[in-house]
Image 1 (cartoon, rainbow, N blue to C red):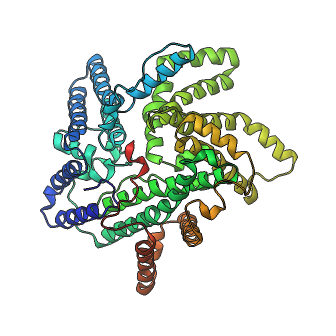
Image 2 (cartoon, rainbow, N blue to C red; image 1 turned 45 degrees about the vertical axis):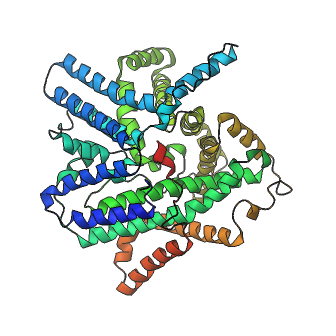
Amino acid sequence: MQATFTSFYFLCFYTCILLIYYLIPKKTQWVFLLLASAAYYLLTGNGILILYPLAGCAAAYIGSRVIAGTEDAGRRRRALAGTTAVLLGILVVLKYVNFAVNTVNGLAGLFGVSAGKGEVLRGLHLMAPLGVSFYTLSILGYVIDVYNKIAEPQKNFFKLVLYGMYFPAVLSGPVLRYREDGEQFFRPHVFDYRQVTFGLQRMVWGFFKTLVISERMNLVVNTVYDDYMSYAGIYVWIATVCFAFQLYTNFSGCMDIVLGMSQTFGLKLPENFEAPFLSKNISEYWRRWHISLGVWMKEYVFYPLLRTQAFSKLGKRLRGRFGKKRGKQITTFSAMFLLWFTVGIWHGGDWKFVIGSGLLHWAYIVCGELLEPLFGKLMEKCRINPKSRRVDFFRILRTFFLVNIGFVFFRAESVSAAVHMLKAACVWNLGGLAGGPVFALGLDAIEAVIAAVSLFVLLAVSLMQRKGSVRERIEKKRLPVRFALWYALLFYTILLGYYGPEYSAAEFIYQGF
């Protein structure tokens, strides 16, 4: 069975699970979900890889029990440190050893020192289990919460395994927090027609995003990025904007399927997206994009960093030298640098991720903070109302443009390829390229129209969601209207999506993280 949620065989698997889930005794539902999660892992890849999440859950179970079972501060710290070392150690070995080796080799090469090929451990990366970055953060957050006494330790090991390996969320998140999301997995859930219907409706919306929009955007993106030396100017920007929508509809569509699927089981998982491309600045963008990761990073990386002794001493020295306000600002920016480096490297063991999803956004936020007073004075001098719709529209376009520069690094095959593409993008030619007209970029005229109409539907729904749940508003319509809307979306997806029993939609982009 294929791991992706859009495969025919997975949908058959899910349908069987849902039917049995509400037929069995309520007190055994969590056990059934655990067995289903284990079966999903065993059926979608190398079965032995299930040992990795099991080892992580075992370390978290033992560590949390030790932490909760003693008031000795030293023992608690050692238990937390040991558990963290095991969880992060597995993640580092599976995903980042080659990154470290290749980085060292690259630095050695700058000084003319030969350090080998740096690929000796590539096989470990290829054996990484599904969703290792997602379940590691969820389990590690649980242990830290137990240490901070804001979560009760789970006494049943198998319940902790279900929390860590819940099959819809293990593939691409969202990143869970046990104190908010954990206990619901173990409560009995009675069949609720409204919740099941709402969940299925959200799944259809997710399929629409992934199969109709994302897959079409992928054709344009691959045409340009896989042959980037042949394209320049407007073609690079077209492909990059297409990648922005490909990634968004792919990832948010996956989240719609995950959250909708969970809703059919009576589970409410945290939202992960809130119309991010309508953000007015980079900080707001990251409050709307991959929300669960941003919350986790702030709560378990950024704030603890600022509370460390090293940063406390640094803050005192900087405040004494530069003044209270500026010293605090520099301290915060320093902690943010480490935060965004962590965010970047979480996305993948390559400098293109560290730059495109991490440090570049850190630079954006720092520059925005430093230049905000200057921009305020300029708008005041030019008598521009900073709260006007035109200014907001400009801010949205500016933010989207800056985000797309990061996406060039994210999608390009390497940092050097990204730099080349950004240089080529500055050549504003509208024709005469080897790529030919826009319709030669992977989509013919009809397919381009379908993509444009679908994106318009996506934008319209995103704007409506700002005023409340679209599903609840549709629910209030008359029965024929409700059926017409949902069946129109369903058949639109079936007729125009890339699907079928033998067809495997491109794997979810975030599946590899």
